[in-house]
Image 1 (cartoon, rainbow, N blue to C red):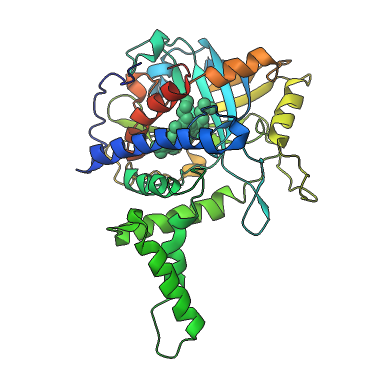
Image 2 (spheres, protein in one colour; image 1 turned 30 degrees about the vertical axis):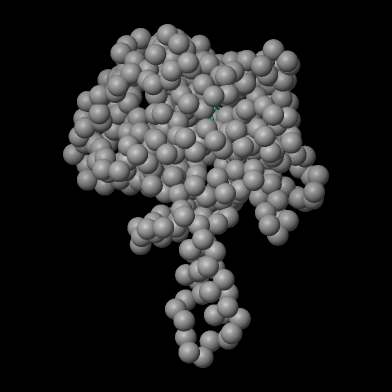
Length: 400
Ligand code: HEM
């Protein structure tokens, strides 16, 4: 099946496209496909099955209603939100962002079980208006989110370097060498009187890096990107406790169009906040490997419907601090500028883990380019996603 979406209107006046971007995107797409193959072959737990290129592990899919708020202000009645009170059917998939279906709290190299990035993807079914991709004719508006307001990689160049590094690993899953430049920098410049062990370690790291082609032409900007990714992972993603995937806030992180001349970021937050308490004791089997799936299953078996507010923040093209080309950034006053524009209701009971539901969940393809033209994805990370998601979904035999 061919998989190119319709040609979008470019996101002027917001975007600045680097000259080498098209080639870098093509290489990332090709690496993504070969990584899917590699994991299917080498990760025994996949049993040869091709999975999503990332967000491989699902906690479950649920059916929902996505209702545009009746009291939505006129200035926000754009695209999907142009019809106050309209109720859309929707599907939501909750996931771990990791590329393998591993333990929800995966042990790091010191054996400490860590939180990872979590995903919530919403598919609002059958919307009206000009669409950016064919989407098997379904006209769905998809919103893909993670549980931090920023993404861990700034741009196409950094993401390509990550994929090149992942490709060195047997399971296509070890990002470790990506951060070697930080380890090297932490040793500081060579000193005459430094201990031999330190200079030996410096030489060892340099030799490893020189043998990895992904580090050819490594620039100071690349070093900055590596440091930012490390900071996002260690200070934003790893500390985020999620006891239940239906109790935490999610963010689109990258920017999107909000009609001509406006950019938006979006987020979904539980209508009632439930504090995510740390686990009293973390052992090898507490919490269990799939505790997020168990929590979702229990919530869907409770007597209360689940409610999320869907919120946006918008900015004019005139603003000069939007950092559209850097997905690791948030906008000024990020915390206080979200406006509620829709409500998501997930009715109970549901049986997300019965065979039919699991098969349906596996087939679904969420894609930021399944979108109204009014909400066109913006910025390098989103331009990269335009090809990647169609290819990943086609390759694993998902819907389009
Ligand atoms: C703002 C940045 C991003 C966010 C918030 C995000 C979020 C998500 C989420 C929530 C999913 C799971 C969808 C589902 O449940 O099926 C997903 C899937 C996926 N993402 Fe991303 N993502 C981002 C950037 C990227 C980038 C830069 C790439 C790679 C170039 C990427 C590649 C993929 C792939 C391949 C899938 C699986 C597609 C499929 O087979 O259906 N994502 N993403």
